[in-house]
Image 1 (cartoon, rainbow, N blue to C red):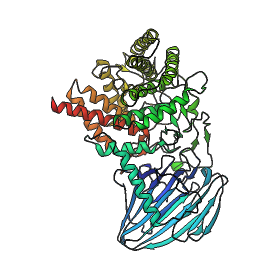
Image 2 (image 1 turned 30 degrees about the vertical axis):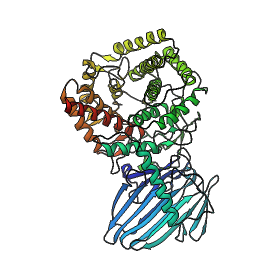
Image 3 (image 1 turned 135 degrees about the vertical axis):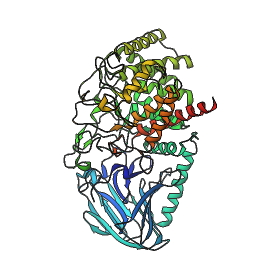
Image 4 (image 1 turned 180 degrees about the vertical axis):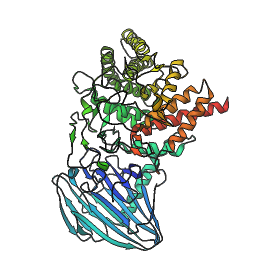
Length: 607
């Protein structure tokens, strides 16, 4: 079968975990029962050992299509052939309580026209395929018993043993439906009626949630799909938000840039809240504020926060290589855990304070107790902003004075001052204002290169970095400031001419000019591409051609989404998705770019 392109997968989930469903009807990724649990199906990281759960018609030349049930995360995979039309509806029940066997996965198979022979093959591979399991079969029920987890596959079709798993062959006629559930062992029945009831409840949950979206602009469908994807990355029990539901999908096929993103980065989660609050979803922000406040009371050594935490708030995320897995298309090593937890990344305090400031403005007033903790954070930033750090891109080549880190330290102090004034909170305003101004002048002096005629990646360097595109987004500089416009134009130049762009795609940096401690290149970084759209949108106030460029670039970027409107972390040279998938940063930056571009286009029309 080989490996499917990353972009040929759809995502389903239940706000505890998520699964990737391929266009061939195969579930090739599922960690159970949580995002950060060991994988149960991991064929996307090793087609032979990883395990999968496939249901598909025995029609090798069938045309395959995928779509989401309107306004939901219920996924339909459709097969069209000369024998007929069949479809599989996949979902994970959500919004329900006290359901026997939950959490679980439902697969509903239905034939619309013609007659279709189906083949089912379910072979779990517990604990990243490191441990074996026992399989017991009793007619239409199979139990998979691993060392610390037991699951059952139940339906109305008799199962037979096959390759450490189970198989079934069945034929459906027009209008016939069968359903299967993968769940914890339960005495509760499961069949077509139960599947229909669960599906109706799940559809109602997603449609009710999405109805609170306030965005009604030009790109409503893409924005709403991004919102639904971001919601899928939320861990309901704690309010934490994962950066992506996968691990070790490569940023370069065959390369070593393979990381585990199933954790909560303060930066990514804060950005995500910004995106969701922009379009009316404030409840998620409130849940995350509670999660943040809990982290404020924990000891993280000499810094107020770690860079990244487990979804339950745990601090220890040891990075480990799974040498027994081949990796996606041979991309080794396969890593679980993330060593970035031990890095110093000073920028995260800017993203956090910006999110808190916006939540206080658009969500609900923050508590005094949280403010006391934020005071401690701001004082830490005032004391430490001059330090070198590993930066937003988590370089493994040593610490530097990254421009992005410095300007986000400015954001942290600036937002704290604004919040204190807005709420009349007690604060050492004189000290904070002095520090904020020092950071500003330091960035303007040392972050600017006269030789490049632009802001650069780090002090004393000449290499460009697309992260500085956030300057107008956080109001560090006017979007029409000559220095910013020169920086935008420098980044828009092609890589071969010293820039960071390829048509509408923008790279984070050039590793040949700015070594990051890893071999090889990577794809264009989608968040940076949408940041460029925003920078051009805002620059349109000075020159309408920038606004025209922003719209064209945004439309081009929408063309890089997959058939379901989902994005990976990066886009490769031929438009393929790279990196962990789908990625929160990409979807939140799409939402922000759409929101601001819409507003600018409307203002231009009315003027």
